[in-house]
Image (cartoon, rainbow, N blue to C red):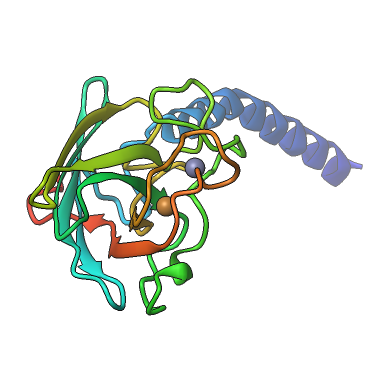
Length: 196
Ligand SMILES: [Cu+2]
Ligand SMILES: [Zn+2]
C-alpha cells in the first residue's frame, strides 16, 4: 500500500509539472513557427539570383535578382537576345532546365492554387511576373516589387525555375497566359552576398 501511495503522489507531481511546462513548450513552438526568415538550413536568405541560359535554338541570356525588401521581393532583370516586344516572364515550379525546350521546369509556380493572371492582380500564381518588354535591340529591363513571393517558407522561390517565353503573356489565358515556347531558363539560387 505504501508503494501504491508513493506512486500516486509521484504521478500526480509529474502530471502537475507537465501541465506547468506545457504552455511554455507551446509558446516556444509557436514562436519557432513564426520565424519564416530562416530556411531549412538555418540561413536568413536576403537575395537570390537566376542566370538565364538560352534553350535550344535561341540566344537569350540574362540575369534576374530577387532581393528581400520592406514591401516584398524586388525583382530586377536584364535580358538580351530577344525579339522586340513583349515576352512572358514567370517563375516555374521546378529549377530544372535540363530539357532542350525548357519544359522540364514544369508549370507556373503556384503554391496557393490560384488561376493565372498578371503580377498586379490580387489573385494569381506566385510565379506570374507578367512580361519583359524588349527594345529594338532585343534588350529588356524589368523592375517590380512583388508582394506575393517570398525567399523563405512554403512560398519560397528558392530552387525554382525562371522562364522567358517567345510570345506575350496575355495575363488571362489559362493556365499559362498563352506565351508560347520557352526561350530561356534559369534556376533560382542563393546569391553570393545573399545571406545574413
Ligand atoms: Cu512561363
Ligand atoms: Zn501563371
